[in-house]
Image (cartoon, rainbow, N blue to C red):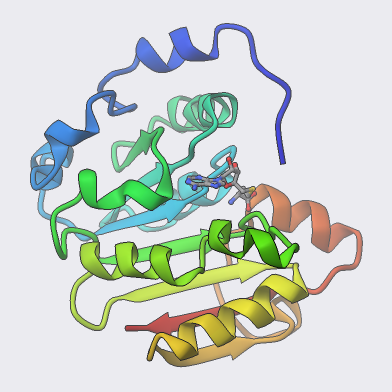
Length: 211
Ligand code: SAH
């Protein structure tokens, strides 16, 4: 989904090079230096306006988070939240999720999140889905052996597709929620889309899958 362009978004992002990594190729293999500690690093691909990544960073100060999105405008809204909350453990990246091996060394990322990824319902667009096998190849490369993807969505079609895609890839489905908000899952941090869709009565699906 496209967000209306925000005037000055690019300038805002460029004026915070300590938070928005502008030359991420240079950070490859050096992310622990970027954060200034060796805490685990978790990423969200398609982080949107950043409610999840900043909420997680507040909840877990001992973990470093990187929010990744290709859209300038939404990333600039995420930056607003990082600045407001003055969070030392978040960085933002404007790159394509299909190219993550350009920015992260093998095994450099400890865990990754996908939340409310674009569903691309037409079968001719299957390759664009962030849970398509070529994306899984990329995620596998930057995660440790047996690394995990935690995925939430309200989109039943994308959820069914993703379970099958993980499984065909040989991943283990550690745990599956068919109605996250009715479950006893604790400390859930809501994303913008999750708040919007659950307020309309949609159920939220969740899966933890391991390579
Ligand atoms: N996770 C947020 C936003 C979901 S919308 C939430 O739950 O509220 C999906 C987001 O994924 C959009 O912001 C879109 O720009 C981003 N996106 C789509 N394809 C992407 C890709 N290939 N790489 C990085 N981000 C992508």
